[in-house]
Length: 351
Image (tube, rainbow, N blue to C red):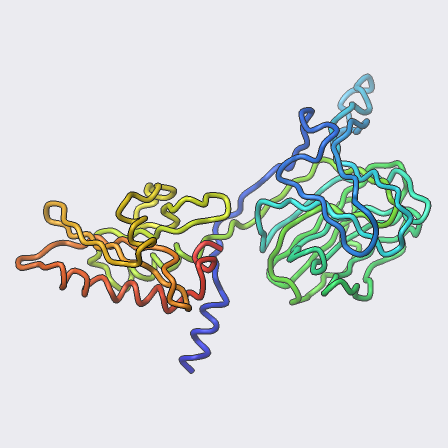
């Protein structure tokens, strides 16, 4: 029983926080290039994709208030412009800076042209270029389909036949909550609710097929932020050891490779760059002891399952009469052991 509890705990590496919103706008400065933090990718065969921002006439989302209002204005839109005639070719444009679990992703799209195919869609819970879900509309086939790629193999499609007019702007929306997926076209749920456990989280992106020329704009994202597992570990340690005065976890992340605070008892310490002591503890895999007035501070290397020091924790405790370095370290060690029992690698702390 103990073994299975540990496996379950290791699998659930994040906690979920109140919803956040993100507008994925394309800017005039992005015209004629692929904007950051997007990355062009390809599922299947064929040559390079051609994603970039261009200007196009886009009607307002809300109907005009007066009859004299302009029906459309030129705005930056994301376009896939490659015309390669390859059947099993799926260009992707991946939002590459964050992984999402539960979210609602909405975008407007316009299918412009295509000889072999005329499609536009969104890819979501992208693990890599061969593993993800997709919701796409076809103007040539007049249908909306949901399916998934698992190791590059497409599942059977699900979705209705319905008119998708080429040259018009439409709206796609995907909502994921746990294993429940809801898909909408122009505000209507035209595909029954889907339950699938293949992918629990991943990146988001835009998707086309073969030689489809398609545009995207007005993308928005409502999501539940993922919390680094290190924060969960700090909360648990403070609950178990309430007499601890302070606790910090120092680690490195992809976006911030310098050793810094990724979790702490005091939220104001988050992002703080490690000092010489913390860096030395990780680099040389030894323990640091310090004292400030009535507080003792112990900094210890946090090791992964291979025994390599990948992070550091700093434990601050109330000093007592007769306090020595040895018994201060003994007081901090249970917190270290608690954290080491929960992680396999450095990435477990920050993902």
